[in-house]
Amino acid sequence: QVHVVESGGGLVQPGGSLRLSCAASGSIFSINAMGWYRQAPGKQREWLTIMSVGGGTNYADSVKGRFTISRDSAKNTIFLQMNSLKAEDTAVYYCYVKYWVSYSDYASGRYLEVWGQGTLVTVSS
Image 1: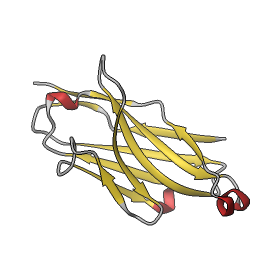
Image 2: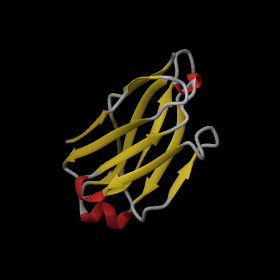
Image 3: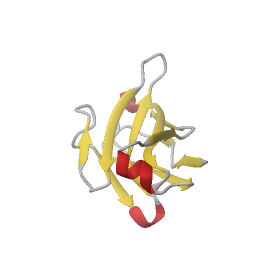
């Protein structure tokens, strides 16, 4: 079983910064990628960013230049540094992890995906 726990959400003023963390633990042979989604009230879930096992990153246009994903590979942890926050960034932020449970799955390319419970970010004055 794999657990994903996000932390770091809270209330921040417009223009401020916040850093989210996401830690994965459990029966993980290796991680394929980790990333972030968010879901604002009354809106569909929005993909934000991903970091692959090789360190490559990709961002949604809505956060490019303001949000930065980074990682501590040794701890299966990623971070989301969010700068220049706007009211429209208010949402529940979810971390997701794509991982392999065994070498045979890794060799065959079969990965699983697990999500965290989310952490609320509120941008308001």
